[in-house]
Image (cartoon, rainbow, N blue to C red; front, top):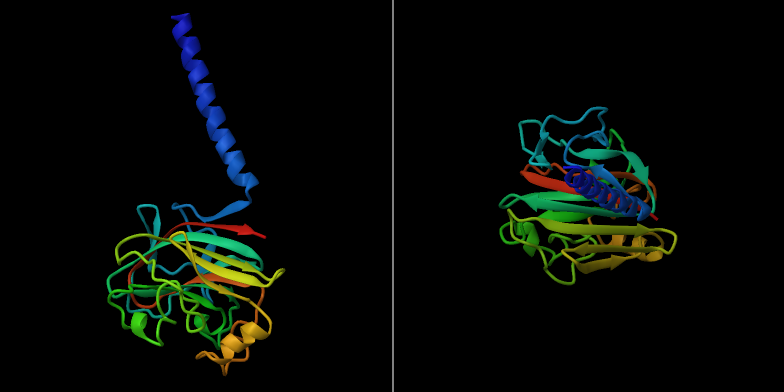
Length: 233
């Protein structure tokens, strides 16, 4: 009996060490969870101190469900400058949403009028996927840089996106499902030229904030987000 108890204790200790080592390894890589599937502690509504009721938790994922209320965009409470953002998203059929960075709250402006956007879209059914020509396709730097390839999974399936913004070396990229599909310079003459050719060309503030909130868009369609984490550079 003593031998059995000893072996059980050894097994528990080994498992505990593995979990601890795994946690320490993740922390040493610099990743910080922004949404772990249990709460919205790191988020609030755009231009609101509280979370919008339309955003709930569904099997460990953020779920936005449309209502009669409009523009229920949400943002992180913290602001970021140089970072890698990793998350997974799933869109409903004919759905549309977006991931923002460099957002500043301004009661005179909508969220998409302040921060650039990584497009979230049903590429098979939404008309934006076939416009301009692909500057509104999933994974695009919305209306500014079109993806080099369509590696998006269909509506109802998860997609993993990794957004990297580094103003120190002036490099930005969007990786979708393991493939880098967009690269750009997030400030300077090249950046200004991208804005000048986009629908935001007449804005005085769009894309000018190197430090700002991250945001997720209410575009009137069901959308899910999960496993949201960030690593500052």
